Image 1 (cartoon, rainbow, N blue to C red):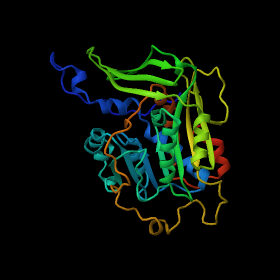
Image 2: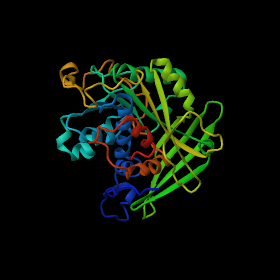
Image 3: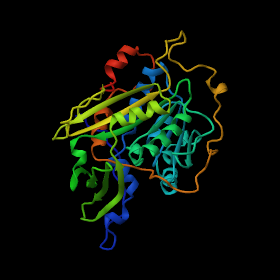
Image 4: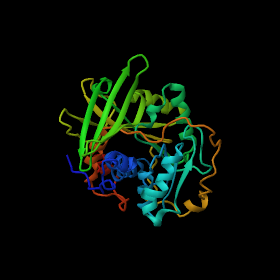
Length: 363
């Protein structure tokens, strides 16, 4: 498995008897350090979009964006790009503005727009090329009615000529085991993932994330989740129902030792697989014929699709419906296998056959 790129360790103050590390360390820094892999996610999005439409995406909306690490990575990768992050948690949005990637990169601040809103109901006035719902955000929908509500809203927010929706999902036999704890070590803390309970009647899993520090202190269950464990087929059927015309799955397995395989396109997954993660890609039309203009975005894009004031939302919420940051244990390890890949941000000229052959390893 490829090693992940080094990231800054969480900052904290000097520990005293009255100030354990669990009280002085920023939980969102721990979260980004142990969960996020924005460059790997971005590499996948760009290649999947190129396969579908033979060009690069210019606008992206990250639903349930949390700290907006992926959104900032997307915008920073190209001066043409603009991004919108939607989350109903005002605290995490404020943290993203003051302490996250957005605060550290002034070159993107006028092109990254964080919006307090409801990803199930609110839609930006301007459609975008890509809508993403990562960190298992679909699992916050506990009923099919609720799932369809979100997917219809995501569909509504996309450009109907070249829109793409991307989400992730996890599964495997280990996902249904309750009272299970897994750990991963980082230089400044231990990441602890608990599968507390599972109900076969509702397919609801109760999970929690904790951070334990070298001084013995702990942020215990600092993030908790009630996940509906959907199957890939459940999501596929719902995507077709709301109007998407093409749905593909890219799946990676991991073994008992945590060794991660490659992401490959699949329609079936064996019943004896302990753990898998998947990217779900849905587009709005069949794959188009390559035009003479190649893969570059048209010169008229900015005049035909002007970016409007980002904070203008339809149906701005008066209540909170879902959490804005969902985490897991295995996904970071899987995405770390993508981090060593060659960046595709400046290379938009590959043939589709090459992309299809290489996307499983994101080379």
